[in-house]
Length: 101
Image (cartoon, rainbow, N blue to C red; front, top):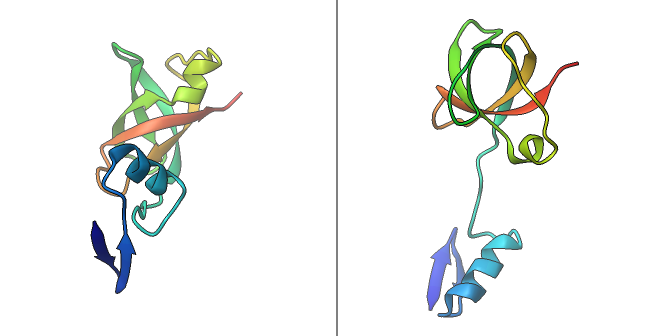
């Protein structure tokens, strides 16, 4: 399979598992937008490890706990200061990546 991307022709294997490994190695095929981080305060704990977070900018977002925090059993309760990672595509949802002490 031959794909043209940004003026470059790239020959890709037809097998899916090989295509996935090529994308994972950081090739030119997958360009990921940078997420940005904003500090905020947890105002409400919801079901399924989701939280309502009031950002320092005044906006309120719905955020879930990042996998690393879940892995290390970091507990979050209302009132905690947290750092939320927001996607540039949807500014109403985020991922809690750090809890202040």
